[in-house]
Structure formats: structure tokens, C-alpha cells
Length: 244
Ligand SMILES: Nc1nc2c(ncn2[C@@H]2O[C@H](COP(=O)(O)OP(=O)(O)O)[C@@H](O)[C@H]2O)c(=O)[nH]1
Ligand SMILES: [Mg+2]
Image 1 (cartoon, protein in one colour):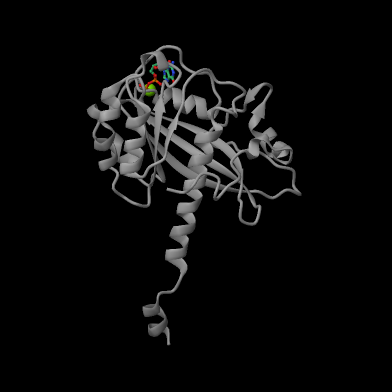
Image 2 (image 1 turned 120 degrees about the vertical axis):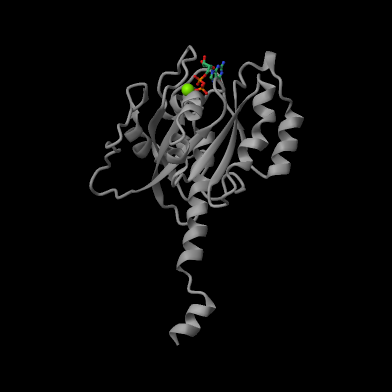
């Protein structure tokens, strides 16, 4: 688990100098909706690399997967529950500034949201969701104890250490009906060494409520990439001996 704010600047969306980058993902009073082939356009003198990641949303029906995808993209939240009929993908762009060197990157997340019933009925859907996924968000609802108890089952299915794993507790705004205590969350976090973030309530300006989750994902994904490239490109002692 990467300590928050150690790889990227956490509250960069609040800094004045980030404005020209965040403007590219905003439209009127909310966020810009990006289609699969669209991307933010920066002026020619500002070169910003874009890094692409695939993120799967995992969790039982009604836990809030579709709502979370809309929240992260800054779109209107669904007011009623309609089971997602197949796979829905949502593209999210998020600018980040790396702490080391101060480079700015656009993180492009493609969120994969699939209805639980569709996953059960059609065997080919889960493999396509899992294929080359860079991260998985495990969702539980603060008002549904069974969704929290099922987390360890869910995480056990994703044993690949190169996949970034983040746990999201939804419906945190409905604290009056809360079924999962802070202590439960802390114990889980310590046992599994995974970040646990909370979400809920109305979308504000499209940035503030999404920022903690997007920053956490961006930070862990970028860190994972750096680890992977270090192990892939550094010649091992064995290689050196063979070359000599
Ligand atoms: N109050 C509140 N309601 C939520 C939240 N997330 C989801 N919901 C509601 O829970 C229901 C199921 O959400 P949905 O995203 O469709 O669940 P999915 O089946 O996992 O995609 C919908 O009626 C949402 O409006 C939240 O954080 N707070
Ligand atoms: Mg859904």
C-alpha cells in the first residue's frame, strides 16, 4: 500500500497552477463527458503524457458500482437501482502531478462495470472484464453487512499481485443505517493491507468527491507501473554474465 500523497500531490486540484489542466476535464459547472475516442486537448506548447489503465468494479448487485462510475466521471448519479444489463464502460481523465520531478500526467481510467446477474448468466463476461485489468475496486455498502463480510471472498479471487486493489465503502452518507463500524473497517484494512475509502452523498463540483478515490487509484497505478518497469528493464546478473 502506497502512503497517500507520497507519489503524487494529493490536493493538486485545489492548487492554482493545476487550473489549466483541470479546465480540460470540466464543462460549464460540471465535468466533461469523454467518449471512448475522445481526450482532453492541451495547447501545443504544453506536452502532457496520458497513461491508460483498465479498472474493474467488483461487488454485489445494488452495492453502488454504476453510481460510483458516474461519480468518478462527474456524471449524474442514478436515482433508482436498475441492474446493469451487461458491461458498461466509462472513461475518466484525471490530471496528476508527480511529487518526484513535478511532471504532470493525464491518467485515463476506463472503468468496467458489469451487472452481477449478467456475470452469472454469461460465463465469458468475467474473463473479458479481468483481461489485462490494471486495478480492481472492491465495493461494499456501509448499510449492507453481507457486502462487507463478502469482501475477503472477493479479494481472494484477485490474487495477482500486479493488479492494484482498492476497497470502496459506498452509502457512507446513510450513516443512520450504518451496519459496518469504523473498527470493522480498521481491522479489515490492517489484515489485508489494502486502502479503504468511503463515498456517498450528492456530487458537488465534480472534483472534490471524486478526488480522493481518483488520486488513490492514480498513485497506486503509477507506483505499480514504476515497480513493473524496474523489474522488466533492469538486466539481471544472469543476463550480464550471458552477454559477457
Ligand atoms: N445514498 C446513497 N445511495 C447510493 C449510493 N450509491 C448507490 N446508491 C443507490 O443504491 C442503488 C444501487 O446503486 P447502483 O449504482 O445502481 O448499484 P449496482 O447494482 O452496484 O450498479 C441506487 O438506487 C443508487 O441511487 C451512495 O453512496 N449513497
Ligand atoms: Mg449497476
